[in-house]
Amino acid sequence: MVGNAEEKSIDKVFENLLSIKPIFKNREVLRPSYTPEYLPHRLDQINSVAEILVSALRGESPSNILIYGKTGTGKTATLESVSKKLEDLAEKMNIECKVLFINCERIDTQYRILAHLARHYNRDVPITGWPTDQVFNEFRDALDKKEQIAIIILDEIDNLVKKSGDDILYNLSRINSDLKKAKVSIIGISNDLTFTDYLDPRVKSSLGEEEIIFPPYNADQLRDILEQRSRMAFKENMLEPAVIPLCAAFAAQEHGDARKALDLLRVSAELSERLSDTVVREEHVRKAREKIELDRITEVVRTLPTQSKLVLYSIVLLDSEGSHELNTGDVYNVYRRLCRMIDIDILTGRRVTDLISELDMLGIINATVVSKGRYGRTKEISLSVPAESTRKVLTDDYRLRTLKEARPFFHQQRL
Ligand SMILES: Nc1ncnc2c1ncn2[C@@H]1O[C@H](COP(=O)(O)OP(=O)(O)OP(=O)(O)O)[C@@H](O)[C@H]1O
Image (tube, rainbow, N blue to C red; front, top):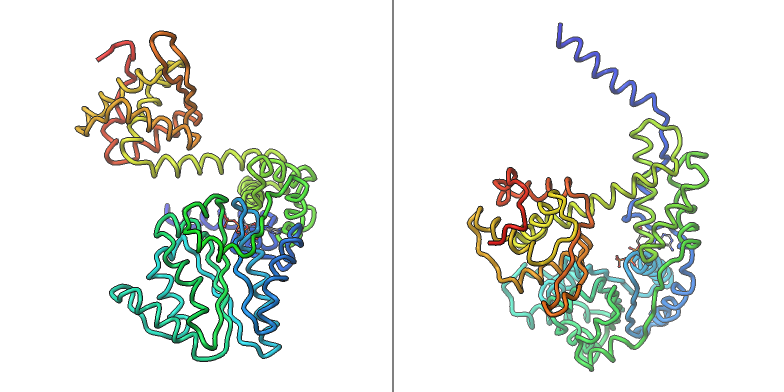
């Protein structure tokens, strides 16, 4: 009997859910993996890239390019659309020209990049084990079998250089002098304007033959981007008029990131859908913004090293005790107790001060240096994130689990 009733109520659940009028026409177009055919407010950058790459259609190797811009400014999307157009035209004109996209966040060593390139030209290269020279020769020989142009795009090139140095760039930027038939151009895409400081000057001048900057979007531009996407994503009249301007304004405050604006719009609509609302409203946007921020904080806190988690937990405990003007000494005292409780090495006061600065940089706490006159300087510390959810994420870590029951400490009690 009970089983039957349950079955019926499950049927009802689906019935109810299906009776809600869907807000989305196509949710996928709001995801970062989707690139629209037309990119508003990137015409100048599209023209600059195309003016350089057009040489490939004349059988010449285009100049190398360095592309800079903050995250979410459309660098990858622009390069993807220009590359696709270039390859289509090359095919029509019977020119052998391929654009090879490499994400250096994932493929982040010289060996892996060369192996990836060699495999693209059907060479069998093991995942590890060969000397790098051999992999390089394999790629070069495969490429040079016929007249062709390879445009290698190294996305997130700053990651590659910081992790593995610039040998790969040195080798690739000199490859043309070794090739008889084929030609290679390199395009590096970076979020970090200063990454070329890490490069050998020869690599720097060869890679940076051309430089293109992608500025952040302002609120009006983000609004156009969201309008374009929402026409594809939503059924008609599903958004209240204030929704898109608000998403655009929030994202413009966070360095004009189109990815953030699109995420905010998608999460707002998902929230409205979950609340069985008929349209997306301003309040959904505000709630979605809080949810995204909380998810971000949770992820940052969850992935902190144990020692930083202990420092943060000390601040959370002091905060829950109602101490509003915490200083480094208070935090250090509680931190030492926590370390003893779970039998973990105690770091020096100086090191803990460094960890406090790192938490400040991550936006989890706010630490301001204050002068104590002849007693030197200290930091006044406060939490920038909600204490309860932070405490929960911290004690989800099995090493800190036994601290769940730790009572708030009285920081006046010096050790
Ligand atoms: N002008 C634009 N028009 C429409 N969508 C855009 C535009 N610029 C960026 N986007 C969208 O914003 C998202 C992020 O863009 P993209 O990945 O190109 O940024 P990026 O500058 O390469 O960022 P990152 O440096 O983090 O990789 C993608 O979904 C992309 O389609």
